[in-house]
Image (cartoon, rainbow, N blue to C red; front, side, top):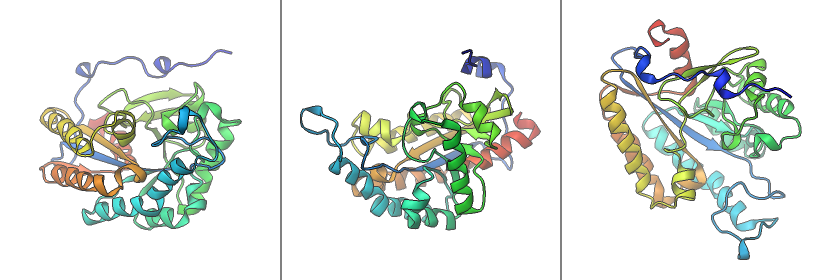
Length: 294
């Protein structure tokens, strides 16, 4: 069956051949903070492992790894939220929709604080493994809409997974931007059967899963890498607007030995002139409605 490839949806375009984007009000760099909330079903293999079972076997129930994630919902989330509240930063919440049902106090705290809800499927399972991708996307959007009163305009696949058909399905059901294509510093536009789909510069490099769980760096390294990237982008933002995204998970960055580096990283970036913290929807609105941004 023929399919549309990402290259067909988004032709190659060197950044040096594009006019520079500009931000309003003297801004030069936007920080896009993303908190990820997930649903790990105890009946399935866990999405991640901090402690492999003896001989590397996949086991169910996987109590230690399920509990590792559960700590993030019971404790870690509240540390992250307190840090963001203290600095008056409103993040984007990448949320498995079932979190609204099984961890209602957590989802309600984010909703009541005005966080942007970004669709992240129903549970944490690769898009390719869904029995009915479209039905799952619709269910996810509808659950979030009922819970918040607003339909999500953004989407992030679990593990950034998509099939060839995903962009067409997303735009069919009202999604305006996606974070799965980590291929540029600028927002870009994918073509779909139902109109444009904006790709925002999400991150796999400034993300605590690859950095802490896959690469096994020490806790302080998270702050160092984020600020190294920030310093370079800030320097470049004198000539064109830049966006820096940072993605965290409560069970990783919300633990006691990492939270200080999350706080210090935010404080350092916020102290620079010309820097603002925006949600994904705010970035999307700027990109699509400001003539100088297109």
